[in-house]
Length: 362
Image 1 (cartoon, helix red, strand yellow):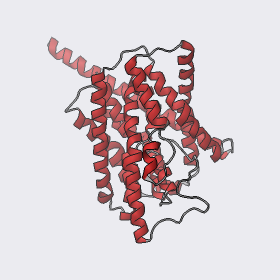
Image 2 (cartoon, one colour; image 1 turned 120 degrees about the vertical axis):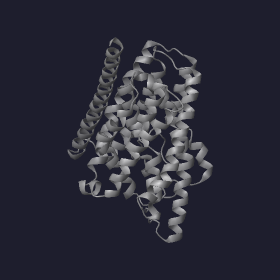
Image 3 (tube, one colour; image 1 turned 30 degrees about the vertical axis):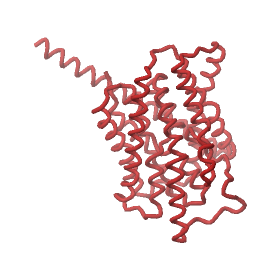
Image 4 (tube, helix red, strand yellow; image 1 turned 90 degrees about the vertical axis):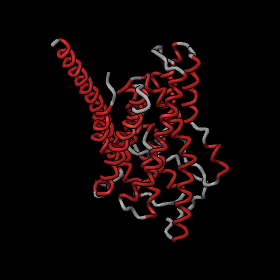
């Protein structure tokens, strides 16, 4: 009888922890959407312009996001071992491999026109780790999760400038052969870009020439992720004044990120966002089934709570804006990508908490 009572209490305790975790996630998503709404209002009242949004994006990528990541490495809390970081690297690389494989399958399942396969592939592989993933992980899992986010972010940046560019170049070549390539924007050459909506923890788009690709791997996203890992492993200490300044700077990330996303949402008409049934199916597959599938698979190989929970959150975030910037630079069709980014972001209020039902609670 005593053993039965203990089992009941343990089951109740686990259910209560699960409920509390989902409540925290839901609260954070509601806060995120309130901030996005504020961004929409500020844009419509002309208190933030599109140009101002671009400048804030650059500030986030180059200043506040790096500060938030580096600050996490300076915490005095429990540290992950080198072995744990190695496990995280392997696990997250496996997740990206799964995402790449799934990205070739989803457009075929949804019967997407062949000339738009690249759009759905980019939306599948690249989630918004920088603008939503980092603040969400910090709020839900705590600052100790950010070292694992740094590893995920490092892989994100490496893949953007290898797989991402290669995929877009092949798609652009195919569109050129079929005569469907978008017309070049007047007055813009192949290597030019504006600092338009740089929002994913990566640098601005690269030129189409392969010679610049490795150069562009050295950007704010990869540097801040690498510095965070180095500081973490080296257990470096900095003066309190510097760590406090980094902390204050990093805290601005969530607000600024959501304001910029709000500006992006405000620029699209509701009918352009919500009138595409295939995007709803895509969102269900990409933001619920794929993260849960990755979680169930990885739990067969590891029971590390923080590694797996961070992986689930990073896999569940909505689509990143980086594919949009890269496609725009290459003068490709971007409407499908834009709609996918906005819809997955809006629906993440529901999809992220659903995926997080599979968070590990102990």
